[in-house]
Amino acid sequence: MIERHAFIENKQGLMVPLGQIPGGIRDAFNIRGHVRIDLFDPRGKLKDRREFENLVVNSGKSTIASRLKGVATAAPTHMAVGTDGSAAAAAQAALIAEVGSSRTALASTTVRNNEAIYVCTFPAGVGTGALVEAGLFNGTAAAAAGLAYTRSTNTVTVTKTTHGLAVDRAIGIAAATDTGLNGGATIQTVPTADTFTFYTTAVGANGTLTLYQDVMTNRSTFSVVNKGAADSMTITWTLTIS
Image (cartoon, one colour):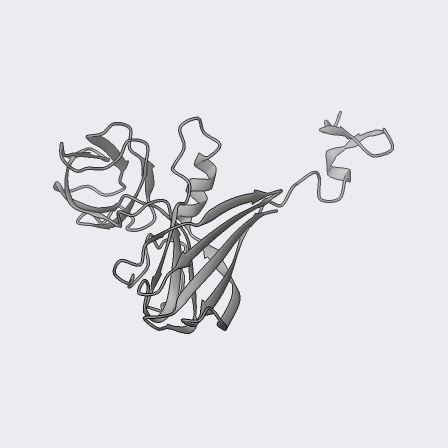
């Protein structure tokens, strides 16, 4: 009996069975997030600094994957802060308690080798409060609520002429009357301005969806940072692909 192997050339130029190379040629692909928060008093003096790791949520991984596609999900453009310290989870599509009007445009985005570095400054009067969560987003519209859908077997089609969702933007389901649609975890790209579809494992009647138009890439929780009304704060978010 002849045993067949997949062969590969080793460092010495010899052809050897793939199974005889420790670990094969597997490459561990990992995405890590690191956050630094700098809080400044009204005179610009640093009063608090925090550094910690964070979670790249499912929608963030989908965003990164889509950047390899010709028409991709929009890249991160904003950050926001919130007041709910519930543990970060992969299926989350938004901050739990986003501070009103805290969604702020990034000051800069830098790509350095295998790192993407996002910097955002929250000026006095913006993002004020006892902050315990932060998120990185690709826009300013947190949600478009109450979109009606119709069902055809296991496909849900959403059609609403005035829903306002942008073409080729990722959509995350926040809540649904359909238990087969996994709230917060499903990300799709809008194929046209007025109609898009989701696959569902459940059957039943038509219903409504609450959809996040702008995608959260990362969410982080941390011990309380007390930002006063006159304080400013800078968040530096680094994504490392290794």
